[in-house]
Image 1 (spheres, rainbow, N blue to C red):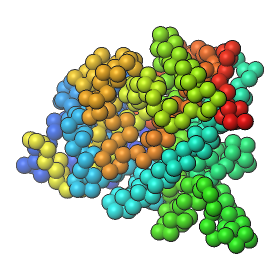
Image 2 (tube, rainbow, N blue to C red):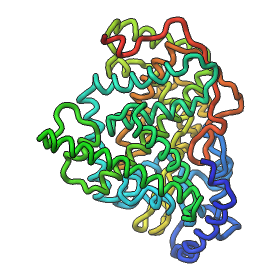
Image 3 (tube, one colour):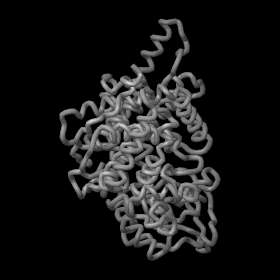
Length: 489
């Protein structure tokens, strides 16, 4: 995950940026009133290395702080090989996200589509993206149709994971949250359990895939990029074998359609309007969205809450009360929604932790915004953390304070965009929220914890991670909460 800092990546960036530099020639019509800013003293790479310089995710980082101070919340720079407009302005960010396909479209650095392919929502644009996103929304809607089974699946995965902690005194917590989120998403997509051989194979390949996701696209043997491409092929082969096995079973049973509850792959197969490439692309989308983001969100919460005994005590009381009220019955979707302090906590972790710092967009035609103009072809980066850490929008923005959401919930909706916005709003945000709530429910009622590395905070690389993996010491509590299996037996 730290490959952006390697010398090989620096060499690639230098070569990569040469072509777009001369193509654009920093170009804009002389009459165009560009945002203020600078392309930097290094013409081939602009200011990219300053922009991606690691910093605490709960801060703006030196690059943004210095440029905002000098030029304001909207400024120009040269990033990822292109002239770029950077925005930390809440109104302009909403303008960008709400004008998807009309004025702007998604446009990610070349390494990303080369690794994940052209059939994922992340890189699709226009009508193709709209169609595939609609399919994804229908998949997540199916979870609510089968609410009890969905919650039971997640709950039992948490219980199994935490049972594996028995006898352990320390954990690398980020590893544990990644095990949890991956197990949940492969259960929803493929009906696989954590102990299934395919789950282990998928996770091994997916780890390799993610390491190359942000690497330089140098397709030579041994590079992270080449390994990531091979890992993606292995993932599609594993999923393909599962598809073939199911088709043979249906033919043998004389049942063309799956009866009863369907997983995501079943729903994709029955859709009828998807190509094989689109099915595999959606599987990759779901793995990316359901794995890293939620794992890091839970890790951020554990880090911040572990430093606030008062909040921790109130959270534990809230979950104990919900458990007592439910009696022998499992908690329902609405029960988790009613955990008000927990929901405030999740919002605050998303705001201060900034799991997603920014998104990539491109102007598809000349754009005028107020007195500023943006030439067609220029990249535009709406900085989500720039909104979340803006002191004019959030009181004392660098302080961890979940209670702020008890007062700001209504008026802050516009100032809070952890999952993007507009037509590309993350379709799986409800699953992220539910996974996190259920995990916290069991953690709070089963364990106490203490972080072991005081200097290990969430970092923006610009992807989010803990440099040391968030090592914690754990201690079982005397009154663990029952599993769903126990509650329903």
